[in-house]
Image 1: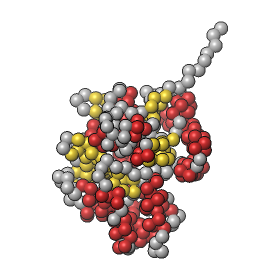
Image 2: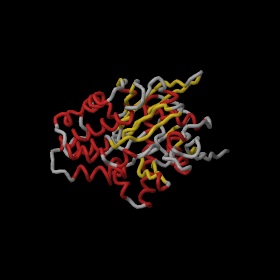
Image 3: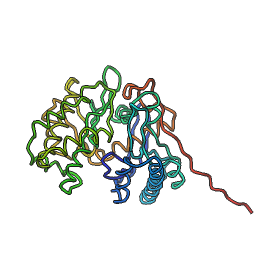
Image 4: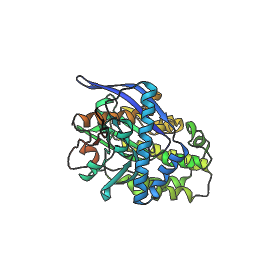
Length: 350
């Protein structure tokens, strides 16, 4: 799993069992920070030509395969297959396409394992958003929680409503917070301490909350395009302190999440993703919301999305539904994911 904040590669090996319900066990997990050159080409791919992106796709697939080989060897693992989210470069479902790089054939040939990837394109071809995909896992693996919230580069929610799973992207989150932290030569705002020290900028807060995305009905989703085109200009045009921008963005994120769930019955709000370590953001969310905030252990916070993508691979392997039309807006549910088998190595007999 590689998120839009480009902070590293999440690798997790899980075992899944099913009796009446699904259960998972984490066998090994590791977050590998990206080498500078890899982070650079992932960040710059958004601006590259089609041919350059194809080259980066293969390069990144080979990189993923090498990282998986090291992970498997380090922990003595024997996986049945690899389920890879890849790294999102473009997400434009309204235009009929989405792109997550990390070439599946390059990965399969490097690891000599079956690879399942490209989990979003089939749903987009059916008129869906291709996102979020985690709600199937929220329902089947984390069903004890009333609302699941992931705060990554983008914050998204998942919950049951009238017997259907509903999920959508709420707002830009760590993409903006990490960008602002970078202006102070920090990769992120540790514990939200810089934001805590800042002051609210009322006009910016009002501008952010007035964006038309927030009044659109779900299903809906966000990508880097939205951050670059809509959010970033609002942040860089302000001649104010960075800590004040951080404070305002945190207040905005907390407010938008709280607004999205205010009409739901009081329940447990389960929070994962890197934003769960932003204690100031969690405090502001708890202050804005009537729901009981539940922040799990570090392993679950860091690797829940990777765990769920492993689970999506299991469902694809079993030819079972792993993408819900109630979430994405497609005309039907899907069993999505492209399967790549490693090339067979020719042997010579005597």
